[in-house]
Image (cartoon, rainbow, N blue to C red; front, side):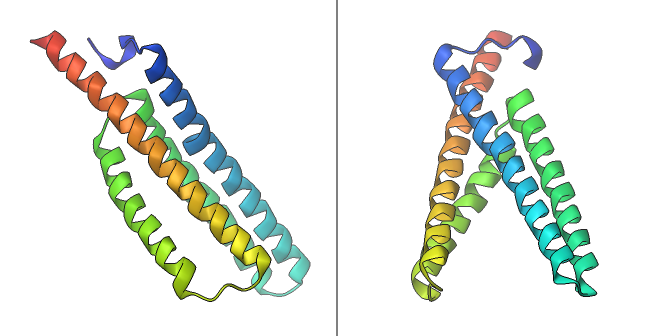
Length: 149
C-alpha cells in the first residue's frame, strides 16, 4: 500500500481538511495580505527605503510559499510525521516565548493588545491542528506497517 491509495475515515479526513485550510491556505493568504500592505506602505513612504521594503515583502512571500509547499508535500500528500514533530517542538517554543512576551513587553495600546492576543490564539490553533494531523499520520503509518507484515 502506498500513499496514493490510503483510505481515511471521516474523522481523519475532517482533520486533514481543517489542517489544509487553516495551516496552508489561510496562512498563505495572511502572508499575501501582509506583503501587499508592506509593499503599499513602501510606495506611500516616498523614500529610498521603499524598494528595499518591496524586495523584503516579495522575499518573505517566496520563502513562506516554499515553506508551506514543503509542509504540504511532507505532511499532507505523504502522511509524514518528522517535519510535523519538528514544527510542534518549534511551535511550542514559539508559543511559550509569545506568552512570556505578553507580560514582559509593554503593550502599546489597544490595537497592539488585540493583535498580540489574536497572534497567540492563532499560533495555538495552528499548533493544535499540527498535533491532530501528526496523530492521524502516525495512525496511517502504523496501518501501512501492519498491512506490509
